[in-house]
Length: 387
Image (cartoon, rainbow, N blue to C red; front, side, top):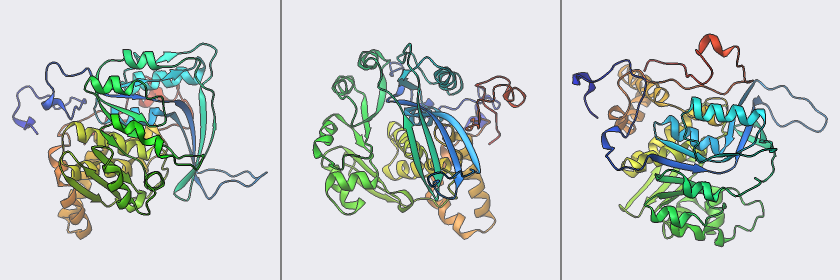
């Protein structure tokens, strides 16, 4: 990292942070990451002892509301300082108005290739967090028209984050333009786990399923075996296994890594996988070693689950810097466990900003437009924080 303390042009009160600033060059694509997928308005209830029985009413300890679905990934990418684009279909109701303003105004996500559809209501998901897991109820309808023309007309990007089960007809075009495709896949409710679902990996740079998905698709019985099988199909294979850690093989460099998970007090796991993927994409674009990519992704997802819900739980650089400096302080005070973890995450010393950065907004119980005025000068302006 450049030594800003001796840079006459450095502004110590600047809140913006671009982790790729020193590697950017004229002619780079205007976007770092293009994201696309279904969009939801999420209501998240946390602190439940369990799911309610029929006819029973339970009271939650907390509640949040935020854009969900693909917004989880897009927001996580944007909060890491990457130039982010989102191609999604928005309805024309109040939920859609709020999500558009939140994503474009607050998170500074490029929505130029997204589309509003008349007489279309937003998809909605209620997520209930309990015992370290979650249950969800969703109501949605398909979009009136395909977004493929919007995807092909979107600004060029270094990378694109996609779902294997979506329409893949445009993937080859993006790949031919030099865009690296990072793919994920959801749970197969059919129970078939058809290997044909993996055929689009031919156009992908990386694949990041969780352990359940990876083992089912590869017909293996351990995440380690699954990642090896997947590495035969894609240049970079990553398998996440929650609190048991993550496994990765990068065929382009020959690196093979296991990364243990960080121990944290989880409030809500919603969107943790998206935060992991966003962090791994940043590390890949920045060409970090595979172990650093995995550790950074593990840290980011662990910070996310400590907050209420989804997209607005995604950490920013202020959160990452706070965690690292707190860890370093504990190590200096003689905490042996902190010292051990610090050795694994020492690479952050050269990555975290040395100055004040823009704070991030967290999920709210309601839209709370009026009560925001005191703490945030206007809706969409994040709270600054010292790091």
